[in-house]
Image (cartoon, rainbow, N blue to C red; front, side):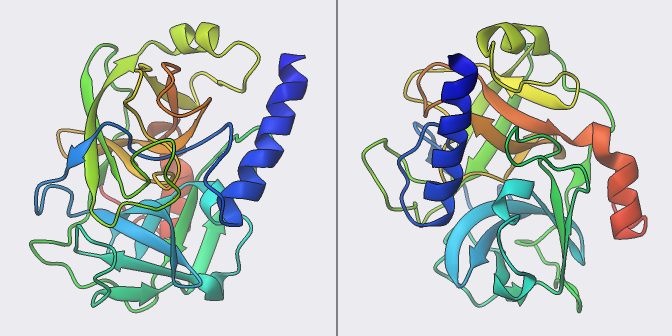
Length: 257
């Protein structure tokens, strides 16, 4: 029964996430976070589809953006743009069109496996104090350690409006096996995923997908999925360390670790 409910929830998630409604079983936004300090997340980008906010992402080279696969799997490259260098995605003076999209060849939309994609900016991004490349981790984060996630997603369960202002939240890394137990019947795959503890009224949800899970100015994870929004269930992230070879391939070895 749980597997059946999961598949139904997944279908609902992808229909609602890409076609305007923010009410679903699976979700990605910051609930219970705080407004991010200026320049605190200079790697953060807002991903637009047809000039409407869709997801977050991170700058991993002057020509490459890292995001979640489910953010772009149903779009055409010509629909994609990114905004960099601002905490308010309504400020679009640093907007770039996406030239190429690389979706992981083993991405599975039904089970949200290999939920990772890279976007190529043909003429490159201009770096500054507000716009910086983030290094990628080649190791797992320590269980019990603190990490940070940020995004522009909606901030309450009852809202359907993304937050124009970037918000961030401190989270704690959980042991993958704890999350496998908590998410029994759902596609928690160790070690391809990282998870953080679930909290009531705090956590990523709609609109935060694709954002970076970071520690000490390194990216460890990509916001991927959860069961419900800030309902006390763990949040699941794509584990960046397991994709370094793939990332070097698609970026032609331009990433920094």
